[in-house]
Image 1 (spheres, rainbow, N blue to C red):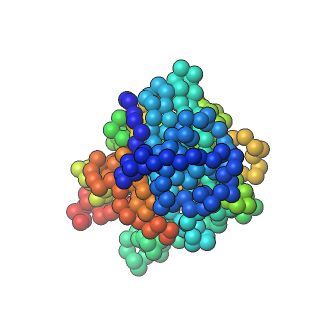
Image 2 (tube, rainbow, N blue to C red):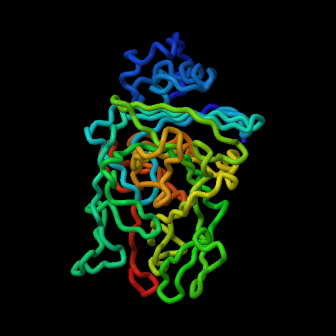
Image 3 (spheres, rainbow, N blue to C red):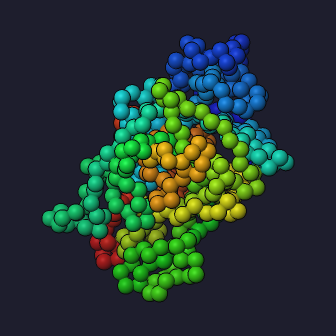
Length: 405
């Protein structure tokens, strides 16, 4: 799978421009780094190429971090690079809440991810930088009740988005508010997400009496529980970093390396967690057009490191990157396993991108996971650049099996 440099449309003319770049260690206060939203396209290719031709290492926010507008691939499956920007709200899971920053200002908010891989060395090396991220944001979501109670006269009845932005989910028990324990504060975690749609599926078990989801083969490794039947659904594989705690200026950076043949999360503690988006009530499903029915998150526990996917397989399946706001873990020493084993991820997407799409997703648009599930277009949709929104909610649907529409 050969790759060439892929840049945002409209930047091809930048290859003809030349200008001397200044050393990375002199850039932290340089005026060229004050506006990194893509409005300054001068000298684009020389700056990007110079960065990718230099060793991958953590350092100050540099000109390449500031300039990069879209995912850039070099090399091939065996040895190559991926360099991409993280913009607010460009890619998130179904039903995620994408909060606005407390300041209401997204101008200096950006992240970058650089990944260098070498199969011969069995290495995948990450360099991640964050800029302007709110320090210890406090998130309060609005309870939308029970998606199975649609009668507005009943207590705890369902409230649709945007009036609500959180709904209880027995298969993803993320708390409504963050931090759940105030003394913990909040932090950030980067997820590398391999979509795997169309390449693998998981067995899910539904009650034969009421069509309610009971779990999956991850919950019942010995086979279907009594009184259930099996329906296969695709799942994605999400791989975690350890938590990022930005400094007083909202900046953070870190590098780490994981094996190429069996990719793990940072620290090597676990491989991936399986995540699906599927009907919890099969009566609310439409087999031929899933996005007309209910699609809710399902999250299984982290898998052992020995079950890691190869980097080649993850790339070929298609990659998303998602920086989420998470509960802080002051109880875990630096470098320790700070993953959450109750709900895995928070459902609070913040900075993201989708290099599986040619050119990625520009700021002000949002990659459509429902479109990917159905393999239809358009793949991106406009969203508020800095306002809060729920990502593609399909919390409930008519009871189609009873004739509702």
